[in-house]
Image (cartoon, rainbow, N blue to C red):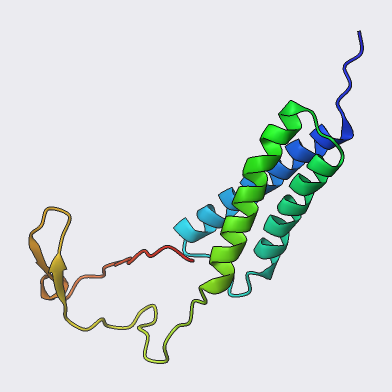
Length: 133
């Protein structure tokens, strides 16, 4: 018995793979603070996942292809929209790698006040993470 898959189903599955793959790469690069300044490639890939998902419906995908196409379309539209509207601009007075930070205090993960003056004289990596959209 030969197994064959409708073209639409293949497109739906491909759309999901593209959307998830691009999203995983985005979050991997965000975690490593390595997102590119020009995000057009990410936007193009997410929008291609949307186009593939829509094409799956046009080509009359089977149930598996339709199920795969829906999250691909949602992921592609949501992330391309949020990334495209949130420009990440560094102010001219931003602290650069290797520069001394100004003194500050803030609550830590236990609710205790942390004072940066305690770190004086030691090399320290301080990472403030913010979502990149």
